[in-house]
Image (cartoon, rainbow, N blue to C red; front, top):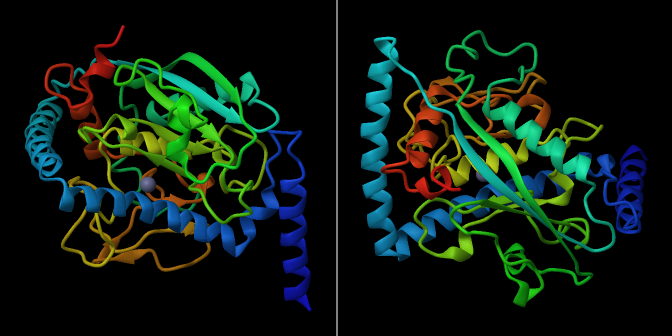
Length: 341
Ligand SMILES: [Zn+2]
């Protein structure tokens, strides 16, 4: 009986959400407790890993650039670690300009929501968020705090289009119903649209991002489903604006903590201070589940995991070095962002 009631609540929530097109800011929080929601988070994480693995396997030019970049990141990180040890680190602030492209069906995103999301992004990258209570004692030891990367909202573009998009890549060009990117390579073009609820949970990702050196402008974007965009009152699942921090982490060359595969401890995310892991974490982890793998405590509170927004709050020092290497004005694979005017 209880199961029937829960199913009814979930179906009603989907029905209401699908019929609530007039209010683009409504967050159907009840949906977050459905099985579908957990599936979408898993689908999102696997999509990114599959995309990267397939590109590495099938595109030798990309694989060559990727390996070359990894060498640079290693050298860069080593230099930063040495500077840190000798107390000589003085990191310049990198200011990155972003453009928000909102393709909407009924109501555009309110400006306050967009501005609030950019502010949350800055809080995330400047180390201004506190973590949940009850974290393992070593949680704060690896916290990068301020990455010295900040974001500035350059422009917001809107386009009304009532069609049901089949995939997020169609959003990236006017000819396929979306919006052409502004100054590609010199701005982060963030695309926000509702695919998940509009498709009845059948398609869509919570977020998606290109990664450096893909060589294909089609992938030089960050996508966030409207469900996960902005800071709103709610359950702490997806409403605290942390998905964008995760996706921009990818855009700046961060992998998920288990690396390119969850199958073995041998591969990881190529970051020295994140422990090897074979597991993704979804949902609320503070409920007594086991949080170790490969013989160590997993960092489920890291932005590059997939836990609820309320449980994510930090990047590590190693992740900061990796992102800053990507933005390095001389050698970084995304240096055009840092040098942009
Ligand atoms: Zn991801």
